[in-house]
Image (cartoon, rainbow, N blue to C red; front, side):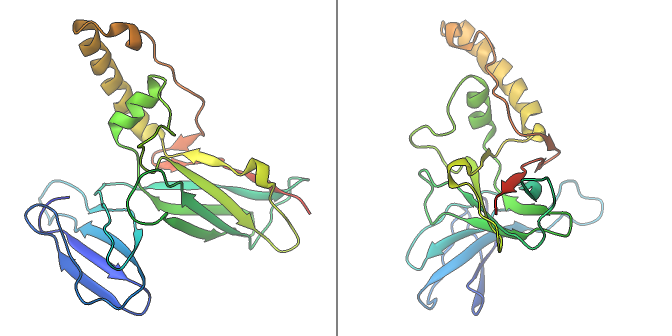
Length: 228
Protein backbone atom coordinates (compact mmCIF):
# COMPACT_ATOMS: atom_id res chain seq x y z
CA UNK A 1 0.00 0.00 0.00
CA UNK A 2 2.94 2.33 0.58
CA UNK A 3 4.05 4.76 3.25
CA UNK A 4 2.21 7.86 4.45
CA UNK A 5 -1.30 6.59 3.69
CA UNK A 6 -4.14 7.73 5.98
CA UNK A 7 -5.93 4.64 7.37
CA UNK A 8 -9.25 5.03 9.19
CA UNK A 9 -11.02 2.62 11.55
CA UNK A 10 -14.61 3.31 12.63
CA UNK A 11 -17.55 1.48 14.17
CA UNK A 12 -19.99 4.39 14.12
CA UNK A 13 -19.13 5.46 17.66
CA UNK A 14 -15.34 5.40 17.63
CA UNK A 15 -13.17 6.72 14.78
CA UNK A 16 -9.37 6.49 14.77
CA UNK A 17 -6.79 7.37 12.13
CA UNK A 18 -3.18 6.27 11.70
CA UNK A 19 -0.49 6.73 9.02
CA UNK A 20 1.01 3.67 7.31
CA UNK A 21 4.70 2.97 7.83
CA UNK A 22 7.49 2.61 5.24
CA UNK A 23 6.29 -0.91 4.34
CA UNK A 24 2.61 0.02 4.16
CA UNK A 25 1.81 -1.54 7.53
CA UNK A 26 -0.49 -0.02 10.13
CA UNK A 27 -1.78 -0.86 13.61
CA UNK A 28 -4.67 0.46 15.68
CA UNK A 29 -3.98 0.10 19.41
CA UNK A 30 -6.42 0.16 22.34
CA UNK A 31 -9.63 0.00 20.33
CA UNK A 32 -12.79 -1.08 22.16
CA UNK A 33 -13.75 -4.65 21.24
CA UNK A 34 -15.94 -5.27 18.21
CA UNK A 35 -15.93 -5.11 14.41
CA UNK A 36 -14.53 -2.05 12.62
CA UNK A 37 -14.73 -0.70 9.09
CA UNK A 38 -11.21 -0.06 7.81
CA UNK A 39 -10.36 2.12 4.80
CA UNK A 40 -7.36 3.96 3.40
CA UNK A 41 -6.90 7.11 1.33
CA UNK A 42 -4.14 9.12 -0.33
CA UNK A 43 -5.36 12.69 -0.96
CA UNK A 44 -5.24 14.06 -4.49
CA UNK A 45 -1.94 15.78 -5.41
CA UNK A 46 -1.83 19.55 -5.20
CA UNK A 47 -2.13 21.97 -8.15
CA UNK A 48 0.38 21.26 -10.90
CA UNK A 49 1.04 17.71 -9.67
CA UNK A 50 0.13 14.61 -11.65
CA UNK A 51 -2.07 11.79 -10.41
CA UNK A 52 -5.43 11.26 -8.76
CA UNK A 53 -6.68 10.63 -5.27
CA UNK A 54 -6.37 6.93 -4.37
CA UNK A 55 -8.70 5.04 -2.06
CA UNK A 56 -9.26 1.50 -0.86
CA UNK A 57 -12.46 -0.45 -0.59
CA UNK A 58 -13.81 -0.45 2.97
CA UNK A 59 -13.24 -3.77 4.72
CA UNK A 60 -14.65 -5.03 8.03
CA UNK A 61 -12.46 -6.77 10.61
CA UNK A 62 -12.74 -7.77 14.26
CA UNK A 63 -10.35 -6.35 16.86
CA UNK A 64 -7.20 -8.45 16.90
CA UNK A 65 -7.57 -9.35 13.23
CA UNK A 66 -5.70 -8.26 10.13
CA UNK A 67 -6.94 -6.79 6.88
CA UNK A 68 -5.40 -6.24 3.44
CA UNK A 69 -6.11 -2.88 1.78
CA UNK A 70 -5.24 -2.04 -1.84
CA UNK A 71 -5.32 1.52 -3.18
CA UNK A 72 -7.10 2.28 -6.46
CA UNK A 73 -7.85 5.42 -8.44
CA UNK A 74 -11.36 4.11 -9.14
CA UNK A 75 -13.59 1.65 -7.28
CA UNK A 76 -16.37 -0.34 -8.92
CA UNK A 77 -20.09 0.46 -8.76
CA UNK A 78 -22.77 -2.19 -9.42
CA UNK A 79 -26.08 -0.75 -10.65
CA UNK A 80 -29.44 -1.85 -11.99
CA UNK A 81 -33.18 -1.78 -11.33
CA UNK A 82 -35.51 -3.60 -8.95
CA UNK A 83 -38.76 -4.47 -10.75
CA UNK A 84 -41.79 -6.72 -10.39
CA UNK A 85 -42.86 -9.46 -12.79
CA UNK A 86 -44.73 -6.86 -14.89
CA UNK A 87 -41.62 -4.73 -15.30
CA UNK A 88 -42.84 -2.04 -12.92
CA UNK A 89 -40.23 -0.36 -10.68
CA UNK A 90 -40.10 -1.17 -6.98
CA UNK A 91 -39.08 1.82 -4.89
CA UNK A 92 -37.63 1.60 -1.38
CA UNK A 93 -36.14 -1.88 -1.79
CA UNK A 94 -33.07 -2.53 0.36
CA UNK A 95 -30.29 -3.85 -1.88
CA UNK A 96 -27.21 -5.47 -0.33
CA UNK A 97 -24.15 -6.39 -2.40
CA UNK A 98 -21.66 -8.66 -0.64
CA UNK A 99 -18.23 -9.39 -2.03
CA UNK A 100 -18.10 -13.18 -2.07
CA UNK A 101 -15.47 -14.37 0.39
CA UNK A 102 -12.92 -16.83 -0.99
CA UNK A 103 -9.61 -16.42 0.80
CA UNK A 104 -9.42 -12.71 1.69
CA UNK A 105 -8.52 -11.96 5.31
CA UNK A 106 -11.09 -10.09 7.37
CA UNK A 107 -14.85 -10.44 7.02
CA UNK A 108 -16.99 -10.34 3.87
CA UNK A 109 -17.67 -6.72 3.06
CA UNK A 110 -21.01 -5.38 1.88
CA UNK A 111 -22.47 -2.23 0.36
CA UNK A 112 -26.09 -1.21 0.85
CA UNK A 113 -28.39 0.95 -1.28
CA UNK A 114 -32.12 1.74 -1.47
CA UNK A 115 -33.89 1.75 -4.85
CA UNK A 116 -35.36 5.08 -5.94
CA UNK A 117 -38.76 5.88 -7.46
CA UNK A 118 -37.63 4.32 -10.76
CA UNK A 119 -36.36 1.19 -9.03
CA UNK A 120 -32.73 2.19 -9.68
CA UNK A 121 -30.00 1.30 -7.18
CA UNK A 122 -26.23 1.84 -7.04
CA UNK A 123 -23.85 -0.18 -4.88
CA UNK A 124 -20.61 1.80 -4.69
CA UNK A 125 -17.10 1.06 -3.48
CA UNK A 126 -16.09 -2.46 -4.57
CA UNK A 127 -12.44 -3.32 -5.17
CA UNK A 128 -11.57 -4.12 -8.82
CA UNK A 129 -9.69 -7.29 -9.68
CA UNK A 130 -5.96 -7.33 -10.21
CA UNK A 131 -5.26 -7.17 -13.97
CA UNK A 132 -3.45 -10.53 -13.83
CA UNK A 133 -6.66 -12.09 -12.49
CA UNK A 134 -8.66 -10.49 -15.31
CA UNK A 135 -6.14 -11.68 -17.92
CA UNK A 136 -6.34 -15.16 -16.43
CA UNK A 137 -10.12 -15.03 -16.66
CA UNK A 138 -9.86 -14.02 -20.33
CA UNK A 139 -7.65 -17.07 -20.83
CA UNK A 140 -10.36 -19.39 -19.52
CA UNK A 141 -9.58 -19.25 -15.81
CA UNK A 142 -12.22 -19.39 -13.11
CA UNK A 143 -13.21 -16.56 -10.78
CA UNK A 144 -13.95 -19.21 -8.16
CA UNK A 145 -10.56 -20.93 -8.20
CA UNK A 146 -9.17 -22.00 -4.80
CA UNK A 147 -7.12 -19.20 -3.27
CA UNK A 148 -8.92 -16.43 -5.14
CA UNK A 149 -9.64 -13.11 -3.47
CA UNK A 150 -12.99 -11.31 -3.67
CA UNK A 151 -14.01 -11.61 -7.30
CA UNK A 152 -17.81 -11.40 -7.40
CA UNK A 153 -20.64 -9.48 -5.75
CA UNK A 154 -23.73 -11.34 -4.58
CA UNK A 155 -26.81 -9.09 -4.76
CA UNK A 156 -29.72 -9.70 -2.36
CA UNK A 157 -32.91 -7.64 -2.17
CA UNK A 158 -35.52 -7.10 0.52
CA UNK A 159 -38.79 -5.28 -0.23
CA UNK A 160 -42.07 -5.30 1.67
CA UNK A 161 -44.65 -7.43 -0.09
CA UNK A 162 -42.10 -8.98 -2.47
CA UNK A 163 -39.59 -11.81 -2.42
CA UNK A 164 -36.42 -12.61 -4.34
CA UNK A 165 -35.91 -15.99 -5.98
CA UNK A 166 -33.11 -17.37 -3.79
CA UNK A 167 -32.12 -19.83 -6.51
CA UNK A 168 -31.33 -16.96 -8.87
CA UNK A 169 -29.40 -14.51 -6.71
CA UNK A 170 -27.02 -12.65 -9.07
CA UNK A 171 -23.27 -13.10 -8.62
CA UNK A 172 -21.69 -10.25 -10.55
CA UNK A 173 -18.03 -10.56 -11.64
CA UNK A 174 -16.06 -7.47 -10.58
CA UNK A 175 -14.80 -6.83 -14.10
CA UNK A 176 -15.62 -3.68 -16.09
CA UNK A 177 -14.78 -2.43 -19.56
CA UNK A 178 -12.20 -0.11 -17.97
CA UNK A 179 -10.32 -3.23 -16.82
CA UNK A 180 -10.86 -5.28 -19.97
CA UNK A 181 -8.95 -2.88 -22.23
CA UNK A 182 -5.60 -3.11 -20.36
CA UNK A 183 -6.27 -6.76 -19.45
CA UNK A 184 -6.51 -7.70 -23.14
CA UNK A 185 -3.13 -6.03 -23.72
CA UNK A 186 -1.70 -7.94 -20.77
CA UNK A 187 -3.18 -11.21 -22.12
CA UNK A 188 -1.47 -10.59 -25.46
CA UNK A 189 1.89 -9.95 -23.78
CA UNK A 190 1.53 -13.07 -21.63
CA UNK A 191 0.54 -15.19 -24.62
CA UNK A 192 3.60 -14.00 -26.56
CA UNK A 193 5.82 -14.81 -23.57
CA UNK A 194 4.21 -18.24 -23.25
CA UNK A 195 4.87 -18.92 -26.95
CA UNK A 196 8.54 -18.08 -26.49
CA UNK A 197 8.86 -20.40 -23.48
CA UNK A 198 7.04 -23.30 -25.12
CA UNK A 199 3.73 -22.96 -23.27
CA UNK A 200 1.85 -21.29 -26.11
CA UNK A 201 -0.72 -24.09 -26.46
CA UNK A 202 -2.56 -22.73 -23.42
CA UNK A 203 -2.69 -19.19 -24.84
CA UNK A 204 -3.83 -19.74 -28.43
CA UNK A 205 -7.21 -18.01 -28.19
CA UNK A 206 -8.80 -15.56 -25.80
CA UNK A 207 -11.69 -17.33 -24.05
CA UNK A 208 -13.86 -14.40 -22.96
CA UNK A 209 -17.12 -15.16 -21.22
CA UNK A 210 -20.24 -13.03 -21.33
CA UNK A 211 -19.95 -10.26 -18.73
CA UNK A 212 -22.53 -7.71 -17.54
CA UNK A 213 -22.56 -4.45 -19.48
CA UNK A 214 -20.42 -1.68 -18.05
CA UNK A 215 -19.55 1.95 -18.56
CA UNK A 216 -16.24 3.11 -17.19
CA UNK A 217 -15.99 1.59 -13.72
CA UNK A 218 -19.75 1.05 -13.33
CA UNK A 219 -21.32 -2.35 -14.00
CA UNK A 220 -24.79 -1.66 -15.35
CA UNK A 221 -28.00 -3.54 -16.04
CA UNK A 222 -27.97 -5.87 -13.03
CA UNK A 223 -31.78 -5.89 -12.89
CA UNK A 224 -33.57 -8.07 -10.34
CA UNK A 225 -37.18 -9.21 -10.65
CA UNK A 226 -39.10 -9.72 -7.41
CA UNK A 227 -42.25 -11.80 -7.05
CA UNK A 228 -45.20 -11.05 -4.78
